[in-house]
Amino acid sequence: MERLYVDLGERSYDIVFTDSFSDLGAETKKVGSPGKILIVTDSNVAPLYADEAKKELQMSGAEVSVCVIPAGEENKNMNVILDICSSCIENGLDRKSMIAALGGGVVGDMAGFAAAMYMRGIKFIQIPTTLLAQSDSSVGGKTGVDFAGSKNILGAFHQPSLVYINVNTLKTLPEEQFISGMGEVIKHGIIRGRRFFDYIKNNTELIKSLDTDTFIRMSKTNCSIKADVVMNDERENGLRAILNFGHTIGHAAESAFDFELTHGECVGLGMIAASHIAEGRGLITSEQLKEMISVLDGYGFRTKIKLPEYARILDFMQNDKKKVSGKLKFVLPVSIGEVVQVTDVTEDEIISALEFIDER
Ligand SMILES: NC(=O)c1ccc[n+]([C@@H]2O[C@H](COP(=O)([O-])OP(=O)(O)OC[C@H]3O[C@@H](n4cnc5c(N)ncnc54)[C@H](O)[C@@H]3O)[C@@H](O)[C@H]2O)c1
Image (cartoon, rainbow, N blue to C red; front, side, top):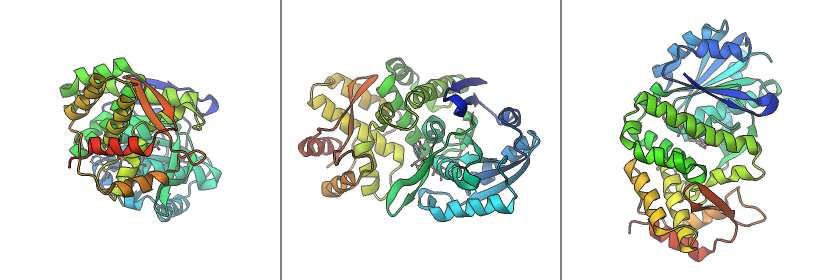
């Protein structure tokens, strides 16, 4: 087992990296004696892992119940949050109780948001089961739901008390979801970890085959990069925005594709588009751009795709909630391992970037 400490003062927590659920009870007990735990999981994950997780969580001495929500981003809404809150009431959760999010980013974001609201905030732990959740969404305390057509527009910062990563759960993950998660991992290498990027590049086959040691090492370094950014800027007042590398165009493409592509795949395309803008400005070389594209390709990303109408993508970009004073923010690489934020990207540069990733 490997362990990482996320230092956020009184909101600090451990991230545990392991290959089974066998220490879940003991690790949960360390963060307090919750009395009651409500596992929130989705309809795909429940049949795979809910019984095992429940059994292990009972070892913490808690009374454990399970709330199964329908799987999928289309269910990431306030109605389902209210269902989770109803389940908290039905199962008698009080201020000392805890919610355990067992699933991907959708479950984590919603269970975390319900935990932030219920009785003005109770503890929650993350037990992420997708690569995206294990590499990104379970760390950092952002929780929330989609509303009125906008992704994650309602939410709260609520840090987990523990993140328990069992890498073996990834064995049941569909390949497209694995690729999606690798998008965030590769992103972390490009924004802040040249050596980490090389590790991902040089161990592609071992990582893809989920070799336990290689994978746990990757997972720990990956989370240390995300955690380091979060520790320096918990509430996204500055540095944390670098995590949005690939997201300005990526998010807009995700919406323009009506969420038919995975988040990570769109981030992958968004990273290529942003890096193309960086190359055009002379911030990175064409060799560096090629290197990034080649790593994404090695993990199964489409590096070009038939894009929807550009006007539609541009419209979604204009509605991006990360705009500041009406200006679009872009994160551009200046090398592999370092990025800058800019607000002066022109429409011509964006169109050229869209053409670069467009298959037509
Ligand atoms: N809070 C944050 O900081 C943050 C960061 C990035 C993304 N997100 C959010 O994360 C969400 C995406 O997360 P995701 O990609 O994990 O999607 P997801 O939670 O929808 O999971 C993807 C699919 O995989 C299934 N699944 C989960 N674990 C499985 C397993 N081990 N085996 C088989 N199937 C499994 C799920 O049921 C679902 O169908 C988005 O809503 C996004 O906004 C949040």
